Amino acid sequence: MTKSIEWLAAAVLCIAAPAQAADGAFLKSFTGSWAGKGTVKVDADSRPIKINCKFASDATDSSLALNGKCTGYVVFSRAIGADVKTNGKTYTCKYTGSSTGPAGLSGSRSGNALVLGIIGQR
Image (cartoon, rainbow, N blue to C red):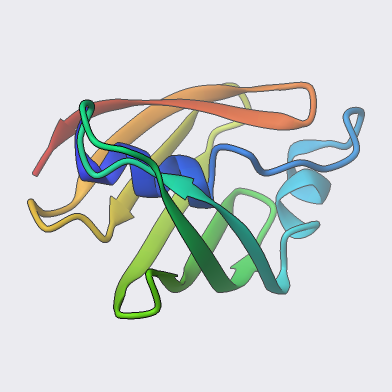
């Protein structure tokens, strides 16, 4: 598992909103600032690291821009970004924050969550 997937999981994959909202309302529900705690593994065999994240986001009917920072062990932090777009059926995302470069993600909405998988790194 790459660092980009783990940071993204901490930041984006757990997004929740009203399950019956239209895509535009769903995406716009994330507009603003938010913060949270979680864990991340820097590789598949490592122990989880506790992190704190702060993000600001802006959305339209078909896109969501998420930018922020996650900090672990109080001594390291990483800038994180995700640009999510939808055509009404599928979602694509360009994730930035990995030391290996941007990652492309693709998936769909499932109720009140986005389920995204990595499609490659650029």
